[in-house]
Length: 208
Image (cartoon, rainbow, N blue to C red):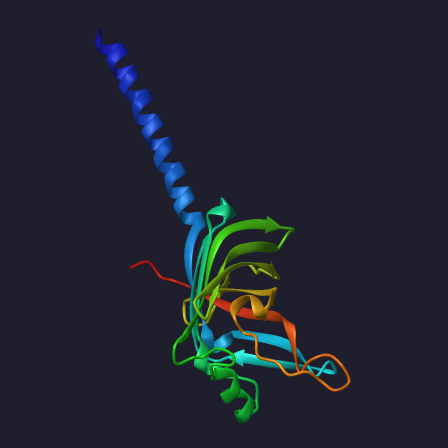
């Protein structure tokens, strides 16, 4: 093998390796990790009461992470942990009932957990996030419909932010939240269907 031919082979190999490095770097740049900023987010729910009104509540303590892959959104991951005892509906007596064994039984089941299993693109700025929701040690599949997924925004302190809203509907009885009382006029005190409402602001993790 002459010198010119060996040089040509080395040049081609070097070019291929350089191209591979560029592709890897590009893919890495498009994948990013984010924390849910609980100070600027809301994890809430809504349920019908007495068949005449809707009660809204929040969970005030939670942590969450999002591994977002803009190059292949199906590779993205979402994890959310909620402190069940932080439930707040604006009524202390009702909140204590929700913490009791009739509902969340927070003494035995302190965490509500969501882990995504699959993510799909939905429209220009939306996603569907399928995953497993665990309440009172019961795990069921749930799909979050995500909308208003914003682009990246620089904050005044050198960080990077983006936001999104999400909703899902579940039947509380699927998770062992079965307490109810019948009404004399028909129907029940608490509706079965729960609307989960998320308003999240994400803070991009800085490289370690």
